Image (cartoon, rainbow, N blue to C red; front, side, top):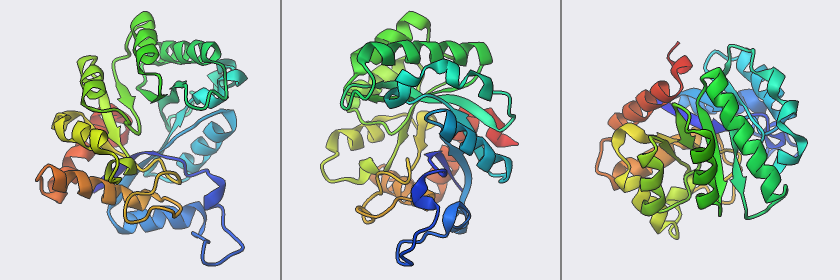
Length: 261
């Protein structure tokens, strides 16, 4: 049974479509499709107040879905105070996604760093795992973590670095979560990071509806494709697919202990 440690079930693309060829049956249809291929747990990720509230709502009506609450670096300008009151639900299992994104810079770098630091502090205060998004900002990401202190559990979601970045993450005790990018022909460095990551630190995700894996590129990604991502890594590492599903789900339940219940 697989665990999708990072998906966005609240996305508008899952809310039906006037074109029947694109209608995925809403969130329920997407979840049912994933369950049919052996996905047993889902973490629905918040990026701001609105998406975090929707994530909690979806988790509250599905026993196999949990939520995170976070302020994505794109939304850092909104301020962390907009999400502080959302951590009371027992369905919330993490802080994030948060971090730094210097590729788009929808919020200024300084604003991003402040919001990131404040959410690291929240992870410490609430004793919750921290889910990190980092793009073109590795050095500053590690600098902020060093300054504020690394939480007991850190997950680098949609890992996009190579072996050197992977080792830096592993050195601070983090988990690496791999998405459909690892299946892309051009993602040689990411694939090598997935190859060297210790088995007890590797997670799999879809980041759906984004980043559909090969052979589904160009389509709306779905949590069912976490099995495609996991199978790709398992084959690359010469591990039985069923065993890799078991290992990555065990890792997810260690990183996010509430998933065990």
